[in-house]
Image 1 (tube, rainbow, N blue to C red):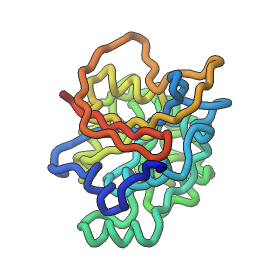
Image 2: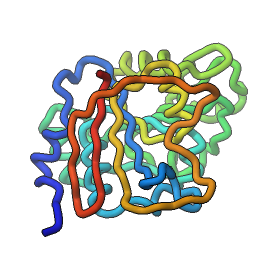
Image 3: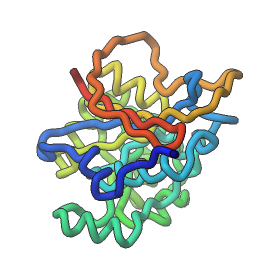
Image 4: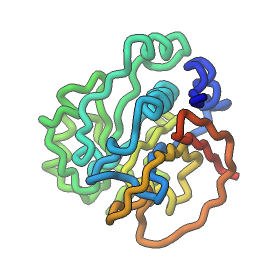
Length: 238
């Protein structure tokens, strides 16, 4: 008999955070059995409907969705809009109906006409540094809230602090690998939700975290859920 994910209400309890007031950065990724983060450069080749349900549940519970500018371009992010049912659930739970999208970009090579901005339900946030081009910062300020989080590079600790100061302490990072690597190097990763896709990929696909140097962070397994041959793991700081 095929294993199934629990009902949505129970799934929410599996991923709910006890103390929403304390800043918490949760990272969500999917990987193949041999560690590939993508197939042909996209993560979409690894997921299925069960992974989408977990993905949507994590978005349901977050205050803000954090992504890198490279992921915006690679994965085709546009304006994010949760379903009407999910928006209603969030409102009843005392959350904003729609979580904003926050994009990390040092070079600010983002087009203000990108669907990320033009189709946004909630005004997006752009997190950059003081040395970023001033003309690009001004152009993006017309379509997003631009926040400086560092002098010459974007500093993860300042990103977390800036979002928390805006009343967005629960952060869901959806990638990409370089942003995950930066958060990891700065010891800003509190939780990892990892979906294991039952496929072998091979080739030259990258890992879910990439950084200039290796770091080690011990994590504690909170749960393992299964749907068919897909596994959903939740780890937190040990």
